[in-house]
Length: 199
Image 1 (cartoon, rainbow, N blue to C red):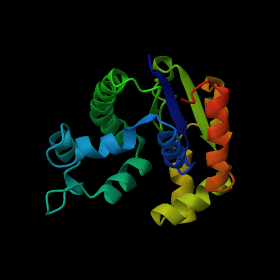
Image 2: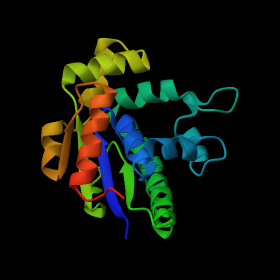
Image 3: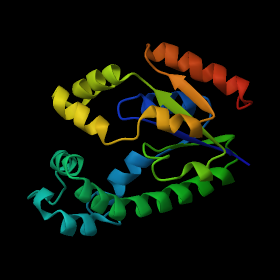
């Protein structure tokens, strides 16, 4: 039976980079954010619900203005809850389907990359939780560079998430990601061997 690893961490902590390394080690990676995009794209299972709930973000092309949607939900907790109530069940359903398919292939590990894993109490469905951590300052600078946000906007987005200190008790593995991609990869490869995941 494949080991289910819940990979989580704050925004801009390096979850996707960590997942990419795990994929090179033979893990099947299932990315909650990617699936959230798929189910909310035109033709996706909850596109119509999101369009009706947030008509102001539907572009003339028929696609969602994701930048505007993010601005709305990160500044309005009620709007964020409304969006999550639409999107999260569809994402969980798709992730479970993909996990079952991966198990049938004989994969040694299935990495479920879920930003809000602890917040949504999904750790109970994982064999172990890996938490990627960075300092608040590193998080801010990476988020500003990646998403072209002001410092104020970056800090506002980070403030909507559960602090690492509250996530740590749920994690079996904590990885500090203040260094280079090479250092992150080396840490993960070592942990992979230590935890008996190397094939």
